[in-house]
Image (cartoon, rainbow, N blue to C red; front, side):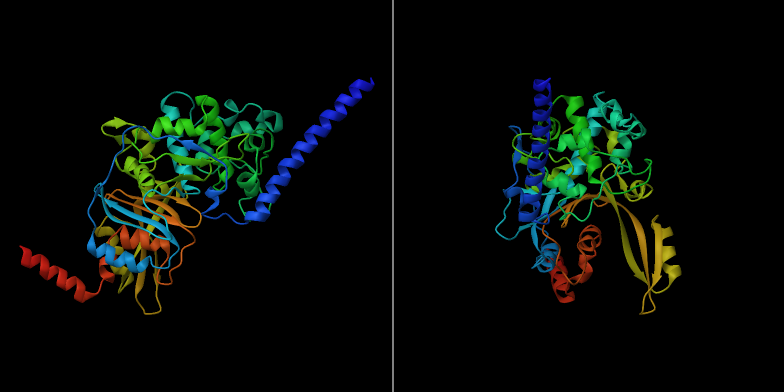
Length: 424
């Protein structure tokens, strides 16, 4: 009897000690490192995402006019890397703050879009299905709450799970985000630490949804997530460098599926290229075409609260003398008019739904895809600083839709036009 009591006491002590040790590490990380920072990948433990033997290289030919605009726009903006690719050619590439083309830069939630691609691949392989309840793959959740069986993989993809999770404030060591970002045992938080806040179906940005997908992918593929990424995307896309993916701890090695994939700017761009090509690379279907088709148009995403399968949509604007002109412009150019507002000047600004879309990460990480213009933009860095325009405005409107040409000095543009005429 005494031995049994001792064993129970010892087991309880071990469990409690382990819990508090993990919590202490989490609190320590939160206090010491504070808010998430673009240099966190330098101290956080990580695993490698191995590249293959072949390397795909974009052609390169700088667009002088675009460079003239961006060099000025990006100065002092907290940008570390900025790349623009059009028709498979790098037309602008620049690095700041001692980073270069070989630097592994963190992407934060851009990683979610890579996870989405892996889910699409796994479904094509018959390993899972987006309409299946998550309890098919994590049955132990039923012990916590039978309502987990109402949540499907698709709910996780579209941030509609209803799982209780506080995304903000990140710096509080007891929020859900801090436990994911700074915790040392993510799997346990998924399999034995979740509860349901509301019925699934309503969009609410929750990073835990993507982390649950990470656990599901681990189970159905019977591979660590970084290995599955390497085999299904990194090697087939002929990435330039081995990437790293931040993990919760050296002991548990659960990648943070919701964030923190670290790679070169050019390798991030290759995800955009894959989607521009309908999921194909060199004629081989890497991501199912039907999967890409769900996210290859901003209009489709807009119908799903501007977010679908881990991608975001965009809107664009133009200024008109009258409200009627804006509506006429939309009809003539087959654009969806979202809203029109009158400015103090008396003119009207009209916002249109775009066909472009992007993978986003906090502090201004972007992989932007514009299928109409065949453009990819990658921006990596710290919180955006520029009083002239927002980062999204710079990428969607000025670069993605060519408005930067209107910002160039008329004299400079005229001289270049004259030079072009003289060359002919």
